Length: 169
Figure 1 (cartoon, rainbow, N blue to C red):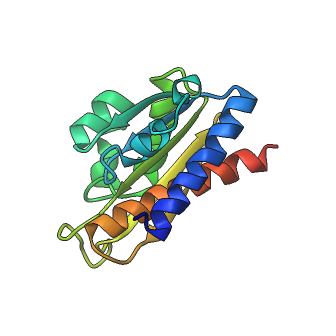
Figure 2 (cartoon, rainbow, N blue to C red):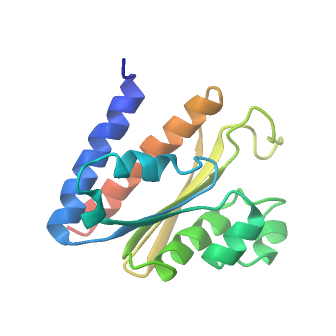
């Protein structure tokens, strides 16, 4: 049985697919805390190869730097760690720069059950979107266990993509 949030993810992915296909836009994802879950939800749709270019799963800071051009200094400057607005924005920009995509979403956060701090408790997630040379990011605080945080992040990332595209319609 599909949960309400899983249904929301499926619905958002379908709406996004239709919009990307109609507008001939390629999408890339840059994921840390979701471990590729956004890309998996999108590529579960038939025909996704027409609008989905690639997904970067950059769990380590080294991978973020190497694959997405995130400056290593950000991890200390805005950290400690990779959970920051600046890192999310750099990841999204790097996903566009290192793919054929024009649009990207990036997520970095603390899914738990450990790893949280008083400043960045479990459930803290930064999501960034990069489109037409401009990036925007938002911080979320999701409740629940690791699975719930990851699903909520996927849903928010997809909803954000739809909003970004709607703002330029």
